[in-house]
Length: 432
Image 1 (cartoon, rainbow, N blue to C red):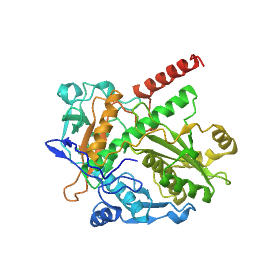
Image 2 (cartoon, rainbow, N blue to C red):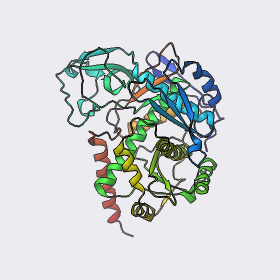
Image 3 (tube, rainbow, N blue to C red):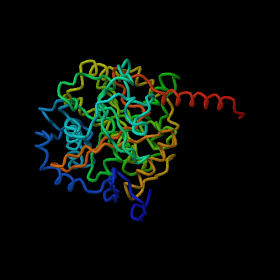
Image 4 (spheres, rainbow, N blue to C red):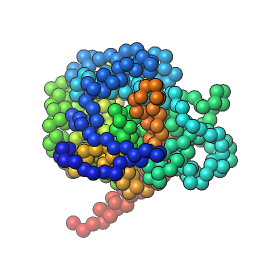
């Protein structure tokens, strides 16, 4: 465990003309610059402005006792329901509220923009065509105008343009501009925090998490390899051990998988299902963090959150096909299949590389991204002055995102699968 009390001198993270530094103060299951109580007191006056009418504690709908809260924004033009989890009711409430606040900001983006062809953008301020976050059968052409908005590249320290639809969550800057299908709108990399660097770190963790999950999913589907399953007996974190105890007492089976890629940032996928009752579904969660225990606890608690969201039935982007797929996912044959896979991964394999500051963590994450060939890490400051809660969007060209209906694998998962295949070949030919 990193000694968070020992100071480290970091130069800070530059965003535009300003340098930022932020020291961590809260370490219970997450890393923050403020306690959940302090955060809730700060954001509460702005909930109505963000359209949040209710924060509902739904923990009691399940028997696990892991706090889960749903946020409601009935007039949202996108998703009206948000969800949050935490090790206390206040922490879960803050989590749900902050997610709803992020949606509000992404629906009301006020960033500068330009309508131009990719060819006409300054060469040092554009994303390479092959790394644009496109969608399958998208209509992008380098000589046709698109809407672009300006973000700050943390690697080159200069402005770079990204598609408006990769940053905003709703509409276009010009009314009645028509539909552009360069990329699907989503929430990947959308994050908030008590401090802008806290938000940037959260956004970076999310894009790394999504990329890692996508790469391993592609390897699993393409090569038929099972995800590396963690031996839960090797978990030495008291926080994660307590979570596992709660699962056991409630009759819920957790499975934890290490889906870390060559980036080296600990990333875990969790699957939970009912031990005795079938047709209650397989529920999944994911987590990424420089402190492995935080990544593991995030994955496990997000799986619980997913389970409670389904039980509550209030998620408006969860359709009948999703419900049926989920409920049919825990059949006897499927349970036997996943349980038959041996758990061979030691939960202690990743060191805790987290630092006492967010600028320290961000520097490590940027190094990990460079290691896997990333050339741009774009940050868009979506903070609304009248609210004052830091909200950002992180866009990393070349990383994989969500598996939308029109998703097609990019270069990253293909390269990862090829590397895994080469490694398997070398291992098979090694002399015992």
